[in-house]
Image (cartoon, rainbow, N blue to C red; front, side):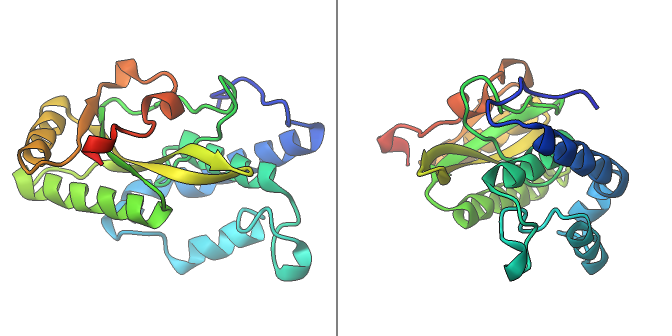
Length: 207
């Protein structure tokens, strides 16, 4: 699979080797079963075991504490490669034009708001996906959480997005949200070039 971003300044020979290893694992083990995982709302225990054996879990935690022994770069690489394979929790590392993931889905992205916690963003996406299914018994969108602000290298703001939604359904969902006085913006796939910039903190009145 081709790289989806220009090479970050922190990339080294060691991280390139790690990236290639993660990419091969994700493409072979995770990408083929994404639809199955979405249906049952998460991967099974065996997937977690495989990810652990491959060094994908806690990649930035010291080995003495059960982690992969890497640093924040290793954790970012895991997130980027999961995202590039269409994983359920893509994330973006802010580094100007580098480290920005391409939007790889044909459908629109529905931006539901920006929060200060990953769990709150995921809850927003889960609610919207349930609404999509309820609306016309169609498919839910893909959970897409984008990091939009950082403090000391750690994400502190998270954009909640349900991605790959057919344009008419996306607009209908936003109409429902706006009628209830809630923030909702439809972003067509063709317009999404730099996710971090385009899904930044929404106006205060809309939060």
